[in-house]
Structures are given as C-alpha cells and as structure tokens.
Length: 295
Image (tube, rainbow, N blue to C red; front, side, top):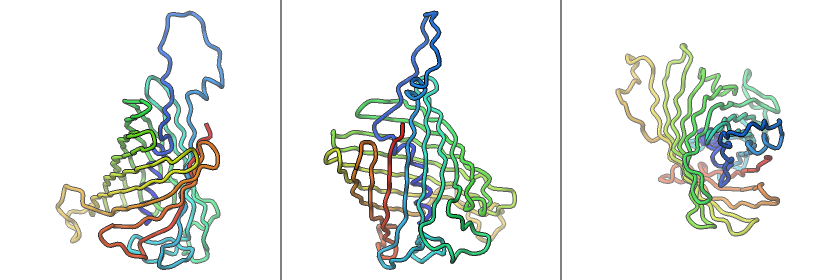
C-alpha cells in the first residue's frame, strides 16, 4: 500500500491548511514611508504545517511489516512518514511552497536486504513550487499547485527516477459550518534516468468529507481513485501496450475519528481498505495521522 502513502503525502499542503489562507500581500501605495523589516510581517505571510502518517498492520496479520497492495507482507518495516509544509505569500495570491519529508521506521529493520536504507531516520522526497489561490472565502477555497519533486528518498532513486512534476487542483468547500468537503485532482509526471526502461504518468482523484462535532472531535470519510499509464520505453518490448489513456490502478476507502488535544493539532486513527470491489482482511489496514500547525 505504499502508493497510497506517496499520494497522501503529496496532498498534505492542501489538507493541512483546511480553511485558513494567507492574507494577500498589501497593494502598493503612493506613500513615501518605508516600512522597516519586521519578523511579524514575515510571520503574517507564512504558514508552517506538520503532517504525520503512520502505517499499521492489516486485519489479517498483526505484525510490524508494511503490507503490499496485494495484501502480502513486505520486508520493509512499518514506519511514520513525516512532512513539513512551508508556504510563504509572495505577491497577490501566489505562495511559494516547500515540503521536506522524512521517514522513521517503527518496525524491525533486521529483515531489510543489503543496500536498503536501515537508518533510524531516512530522507524522503522534497517538493518545491508555487500555489495560486483563485478563490479564498471562509466557505470556499480554490487553488492550483505546481511543484517540482526531488527524489531524495531511496525508493525513487532505486527506480531511476531523476525527478517528477506534480500539478494539483484543490477545492475546500464548507457545505455547512460543521461539514466540509476537500477534493484534489492531481497529475504526476515521472522523469526517468536514461537507463530506466519504463515511463509512467499518474492521475489521482481524492475526496475527504469531514464532519466536526465540536472543538475536540471530528470524523472523516475518504475515497481515492488512482489511474496510471506505465509502459516500457521501447515500443518493440513484448510488454509494450499501444495506449494513450490512463487505466485504473487502485482505489482506497478510509474512515477515521479525530481528536484535537489542543488548538490546531489533531490525532486521527483510521481504518482503510484497498479496492472496494474486493475487500479482504489482508488488504484492510489500520493506521493514524497527526496534523498540526506551527505558524
């Protein structure tokens, strides 16, 4: 289920902001007064959010290893995937976006093969780019995000990914004061090394329906549809398919209940299943998320 982890972490800059946007930069005036440098002005333009996704066991086998998409056990231990999302308002409604990521394994690392990263703290991919907010209202937010992702993590380096580009559209709609819908449409283009034998593109549709009971408790239901096109570079390869469209890769359905011990911080345990048309205990996984804001 690693594909879900990657896609979910890509979405954190949209999810973490929820209803808050950075105030627009002030318009130029004819005043001759020159404002002095102020950390308060920098802080007013900045948002720093934290997101943590922790994998857990599936319902069939309670162990400390990751579960692959087909329900089989992986040698990779369960882990916590950490993400910091920094947004800085530049001009108008345009934000600079940077998202560093890291991984801390929780399970036993002794089963890892030689050459695999067995450190207690591991680097993951970083995003750099921009976000433009077209609509910013208390009840409705619409923005586009374009990022350049650098594969600092070993997983994509082993797959010979040099870099990839991600383009998102996000919608944040308060249907009612207590009911909010978040939607992402995301396209990912993978730029491979010359030695790579495959090409890949992905299109993701993700929805989260969040219900707030009070300032401490909330519940959410999520659904994600992942489409992809993956082909050998060489058209003479026997596995090459002459297709110009994206086909269904996976879908995920999740349900969770969140608790906020302090303002702007939420812990949300969840249960998630792969491909709702074939629900099985070995493809149904437990986990939790931690979301919060520093600035």
